[in-house]
Length: 107
Length: 247
Image 1: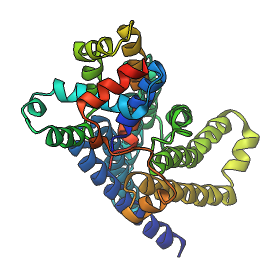
Image 2: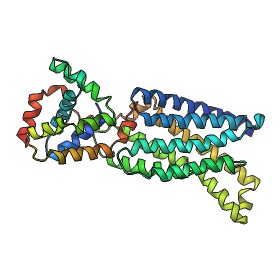
Image 3: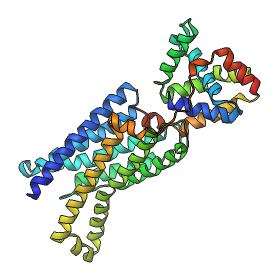
Image 4: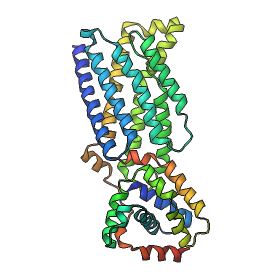
């Protein structure tokens, strides 16, 4: 499992007072709908498995693109978050502060 | 006997540096981490430098070793910058200026020994420690990852011994009493042995940090309990309804 997905999921969970599992799922869904090759998979379970495999290889720039994409803000608004930019800002801050994890978790 | 022992140890360290460099190159390319290529360059350059140092009694060529020491500082600055400071304010230009000054000094004024800089290692210790503190208590981060942070800090501490000797030689230039002590045959021998010991310790720690044999990684992770449940259990509808219900 991606260390960065765990860390961002925990950060999101803390920011919106929700379960980490669901927050990781939200981030995973955002990745799935952001990436062309993942959108093409019609079987939901296979799409999830492929997304998790993709997430494990995501770089700092990949995560930055996902966090800054309108898709994440839209999803946050859909679940009732009043200030999605604030939450997005916190996630970006977490990504910046924890960027060395990509290197330290590389093998 | 002593020269043979030191030469043997140095060749082993050269091989270790190249193994680390190759591993970093492979991982850096595979995982699209260009910062690891800077670190790989550090190990390739220092390995090459050590080869020239070892062969210098025969070749009389010491300047490539001095060049390697200076260039490796530049590589280290780039690695630290790219690993810890993307989209952040960074003192990178200050450290790069120091690294380039050290490189120039090594090429122009160094005669018997190159100048080793403590600044990059101190920077790496500082920034590594700051980053480690943020994840030390995080159960989502695996233990072997946390261990890598600690290994990097540990080998950076070991790497400070050579720069410490550089500082003493600079002091010796202006304080005759220090020069008298530092350049005595006993002190020179102690310095050579001491630096070799700490360089060896440093490379062992670097090997463990960046090559990290599988069994060693498993041992580091032996007590780790993943907090993650099976992601595949939740569908999109379940995720969205859980979050909406929570908020």
